[in-house]
Amino acid sequence: MTQLLTRPTRTLATRKTTTVDISGMRTADKPDDILVTYSLGSCVGLTLFDPVAGVGGMIHCMLPLSKIDPEKAKQKPYMFVDTGVAAMLGELYAMGAKRQNLIAKVAGAGSPLGREETFRIGQRNYTILRKFLWKNNILIDKEDVGGARARTLYLYMADGRTTVKSEGKEVEL
Amino acid sequence: MTEKKRILAAIKTVPSLPSVVIKLRKYLNDPDVDFNELAKVIQYDPGLTANVLQLANSAYFGWSRSITSVREAIARLGTHRIFQMVLCMSVAPLVRKPIRGYDMDAGGLWEHSIATAMCAEQLALALNHPEAEEAFTAGLLHDMGKVVLGTFVDVDDEPIKEIMASDGLSFNEAEYMVLGIDHAEVAGELLSAWNLPDNVVAAARWHHSPRQADKEHQALVDLVHVADVLCINVGWGMGEDGLRYKLDEKANDRLGVKVGMAEDVILKVMLGLDDLNSLFQITQEGEPDGVQHSTR
Image (cartoon, rainbow over all chains, first blue to last red; front, side, top):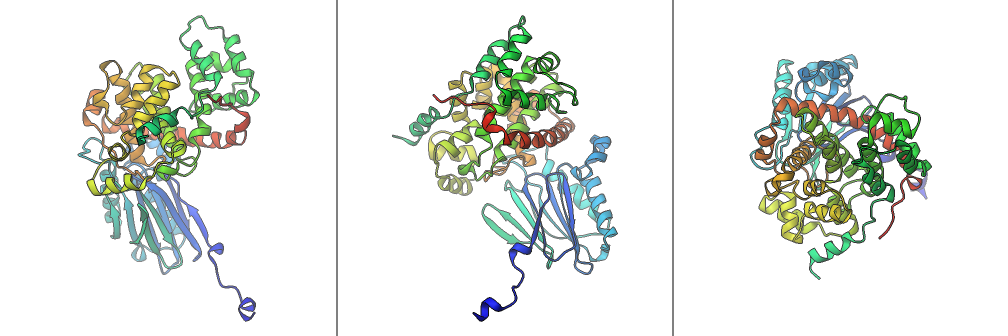
């Protein structure tokens, strides 16, 4: 009986999971928030987390550079690595994040089997992301990129834990 | 009975295409088609009429919110577009289910199918290829074999996954090793049983091995192959097979698709998907009243 009378602790039900769509970006600032993005193939997923300000974000970019259609990039900035990550940083800074506190983790950028040399979308997504972060003085802390696996990326705002689920296994980045 | 025979037998249990699709196909190549007669075929079904009008007013398929009758939709969009829209609605109930054997949630294969349809069509348009309409249809139907294997046959996917991982095979190669048939061959058999045109059947049959296609169907097969790989790359409707497919560089060379064109097409598909996904979520509620599948 005593157990039933104790105050309920936080349960999974109180957690709020937000899905980041392909070409989408979401931010979060509550410890109960979880951000998730599914189906990372050649797309690249980035999580940024500021443990001091308690804010974080996740983006799922499809293509590397917006120059192929700058007009469309205005409609869907998160589709591209260059416009998407710039907009993401802007939003996180507006929420109180500081560049020097940001922890960056990257997943995805896969490619089909074999010598896929024509499109190399995954490889180029990763290269442009790395370059963009480097220019902004942000180093990638951990990553799980390349290969032919589909990945799901999670960011737990309670402690900034970032995990990748792929082929039935979930591992921490 | 071997696994392959069991699978081929299961194809016969898949509902055939609704009669409205078969009627519309007859009108497709008739230059003297009477739009009033054609409109009647659709208007006979109120659910279908509502869905056709919604699609006719979508940004991807049609015009912006100005088409108010089926006849007008036929006149402005053409008989092929109407056929494609009705075909989309006809296969949606089959394709939108969770595909168990491929660990795909409800809607996953639908998203992949519609994305590949748009991608194949947009590639054809960018390349000035004359088969853009067929490319859409073939792209839409290329993975119907996954519906048969994942829904109608309770395929045990564990051995497929094991052999794929241990031998570094593509998913369709692993399917073939375990089942004696892959989802592309199953799709070819199903579309053939549905009496679809030879080029559409060939595109589904050879979408993972375009070099084996007949010369007369080569271009359409190549278009669907490249479109499929691009959509797999992006992750539209990704299952446990992930990116475990191979791009045939020769197919891509024959078509002449360059990186810039591929990215431009992906962008167009993304915008088209946004539009159609919201539409199909709405039409799903009315689906049981939409297109009725007849059973064999």
